[in-house]
Length: 249
Ligand SMILES: C[S@@+](CC[C@H](N)C(=O)[O-])C[C@H]1O[C@@H](n2cnc3c(N)ncnc32)[C@H](O)[C@@H]1O
Image (cartoon, rainbow, N blue to C red; front, side, top):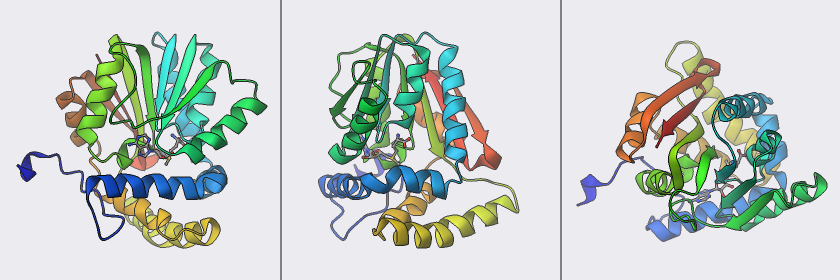
């Protein structure tokens, strides 16, 4: 039944919104912007994304962290930061080969190739055995999932008992005037500057659309609970522009 599917309101990227087509379009979009992704990311977020990732690292430190999985790992800023914890292994998965190629270059330069292993794989169909990881991180990734429930339940499946999933994602600030400023920046400035620099007009209109429809705060915690996670938390960052969600198994 159509209504029983969670409505994350994913915007169609083209006029043919069948599940496979949307996933292919997301992959293609990230493949295209991969060489410019890091610059754009830090430039358009004014560097705040680095502070947010460090907050994720702080939470990771407080939990067992021998085996780490970074889902939607992209160019690897979270996986690389996690290497500071000196875990036994880090795996990074992503559907975009080009994003992972960019990460691989960084791993080579930082001599992290033996610690961080990359796989082209779908976060909604993880190629790992159940109960493999102590920590799973996903930074600005879950918003892109075709089926959020499926992605979260895959994370739950491959997490060890007692393990923690930590998700950093854009959210919607609720208070005036930040709400209006955010709206203006996200729907006017970011698509304009993003499309000029990336040569990909769709990438930066997709971002505000996908954030606008996405559950945040307690609503996101409900998705975590439905996927089997307990002790869920949500922590708004920088006036609620982004949030860190955690859930334990
Ligand atoms: C905004 S980037 C974030 C990358 C990285 N985590 C970071 O913090 O910079 C989103 C990433 O999610 C990946 N992605 C989208 N859908 C995915 C899926 N179903 N499974 C795995 N990765 C996916 C994209 O290819 C892209 O690399």
